Length: 342
Image (cartoon, rainbow, N blue to C red; front, side, top):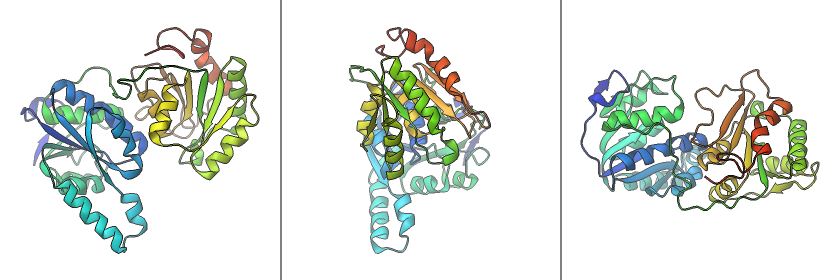
């Protein structure tokens, strides 16, 4: 196993890849953070075919990218629920056969977990991932043909991109391109999508703050929209919308439909959740709110207008949120602001 001492591509094998398999299975935000790798590969190696392995619940995200040929779904989350089921083992065997069907010039694991390394192990091709010194689970590095060190103090998007660059020797563009808006026409309505749900309660923003923000946005002519997936999230969405004139609770919808909703919004405000990252990937002006985590390494990042506000022990106030949004609200037709085409 070769080991590079830095993220530099100087020690990489410089062969031109024809087929690349990306392994980034979950979670939603992590999958979104991996999308710029596709654009980097296409720009560096025109005509390259890119496939992707993703958890079945998040497979809709790479399918949105026009540069991804095929998505191979895995179901680790569901399989863990029924580990002794005959149906589970049948699915696992079928997935292993699907992973071995095609030979790839590069199989790139940007997740760095034992489960993702096991996926890589079932494939055919040059297997590459993070070195033991920087992988999230050091044992994963034992399954790679080549492992590269990429500093852990970089943003997650940049870590993914640098690993691919180290493996193939290309030089990525300075700004990440998520590639999701190609071929879309932005016909913005007067909506503000407010993403109130997160997988952890300590990441939530107080409901009274959402009500105050929603009312302030409604006074500026925007229609607050509150998506909700689970029963609990839908209850909260209805509860908030009922307290704001003109606001709407959005019913559950597919990831593709949510992407369209975020793309057409004038602006998005959301807590630390994958959908907030999806909004930035759709080049919609986005303000991300952090209450229990710091955004330094995993905050929203993109080429369009975006801000990260708050952090661990730093609860954003409604006043601070409105102050950040004021340039967008004051001049909605300005380039890069709410309502402007991108």
